[in-house]
Every structure is written in structure tokens, then in C-alpha cells.
Length: 236
Image 1 (cartoon, rainbow, N blue to C red):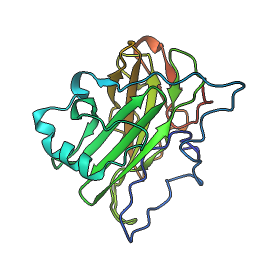
Image 2: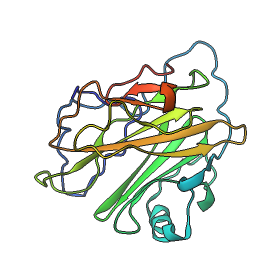
Image 3: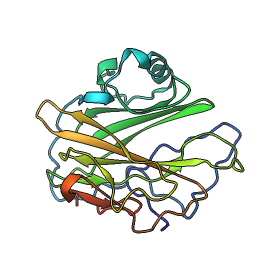
């Protein structure tokens, strides 16, 4: 797997106090998650206001009570943004036991916040999308981070990547079939009042497994494709 499979956004590095996580199977120091926005001439247009509304299975349900409670205990929200209602939180992944998982919130079209909640701890961070980007099919590829808070020597740890695709809905999947030992991708979509959509595509793999360096994820009909573990030029 290439190093740097993950640039730009970065996915929540989950940490346990007093415990240092190992580096990714192959990798080097990661860039800042907010460094993806390119310099642009002139003043960027203001971000479309939100919040975005989660759709379908991403909506909070009665079964997510413990997850929502954990979110409010953990979340670190931007000081300049309104506090979200529970109905504005999108569940990206529901974990076991109940009350664990990954939750996203988009206060505007250029900002998203991720909260990962595990049995042994939690982590949260907000990220910026590129201010200049094409209106459809923009992909913000995430970076892998340990899925759990286990010790470095714990076998079979999973590494989780979260990427964002704008204005392209449909089913995303690895091309040529899911790589061996890697579970299928999962996705959750949010929609802004204007109709703009943001689809969070999440995928994971066991630490000891090296996935093909050219692993590709595409939407139905290959309308949008991207390298799962390669940084994308911001705004491309």
C-alpha cells in the first residue's frame, strides 16, 4: 500500500490516554487534515449554510439513543457554529456494543465534523473541504486511522478511512470486487436545502493486510471513481 494513502481530510486518529498508536502498515507522517484547501486568487465565495439533513439509514433512530448520548458527552463543536439538533446528526457506522460508532455533522457545505466513539474512548475533529471545487463528483479522500483503541500489539486491528463525495449518489463499491479481507464499503448521505448532497464513504481493512495499491472505489456506472488510498488533488 502506498504511503500517504490518505491526505487532506484525515479520519479521526483514535487515542487512549497513556497509549501510543502504531503507525499505519506503510506510511509516513500525515499532513494536517485542514491543509487540502488550495490557495485561490480573490475572496472565496461563502460556504452554503446548513446544516445538512441526513438521509435514509444515516438518520438517528430510537435504537441510536446511547450513541447520541455518547456524542453529546464527546463532541467538540466549532465555536462559531450553532449547536446541532440530534436530527442533524448522521450515523456513518453503527458499532457494537450499542453506543459506539461514527457520527458526522455538516454545519455548512465546506465544513464537517466527525466523532468516533469506542468502548475505550473517543475522538472528534472538524475538517474543511476545498473552497474551490467542481460542483459534481468532487472527492475528498480520507486517511486511515486505527478503528479501535487497542494496544499496538493487538492482532487484527482494523483501520478505517472516511472519504466524502459531493453531488454523486448511488451505491459505491470497490471495482473488481472487494479486496480479500476488506469488508464492503459503507455510505451515508446528507442533503442541504439547495439539494446539494454529500456522501460519506467509509471502508476498513485489517492492519496486517496489504490491499492493492491501485484499489479503486466507484459509484454505479463508474460515474465517479477514486483511488481509495491515494490523495486527490484538492478541488479536482
